Length: 86
Image (cartoon, rainbow, N blue to C red):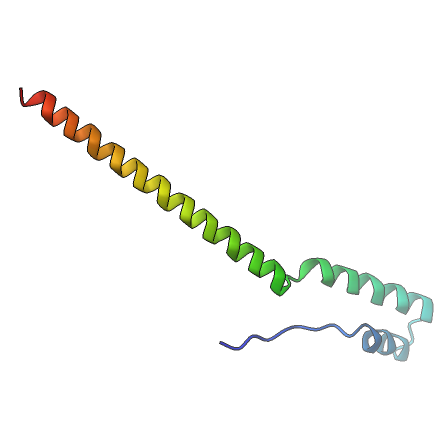
């Protein structure tokens, strides 16, 4: 599965703003603000790997808990059946 990555070129954005008549200081402020916002909003490969690792641990823990509850339920039913059969 191919993965497309959205990139932001701060310099191209800055030059585009300046070319459209935005003063240099304002264009720099806009470019910096957008660059910072995108850095915080976009997940990196490391972020995704960390989430996958966390999900695998949760999956393992839930499997163990479910197995324990199933074994306990079977033991309770077997005990009840044994008590009621006497």
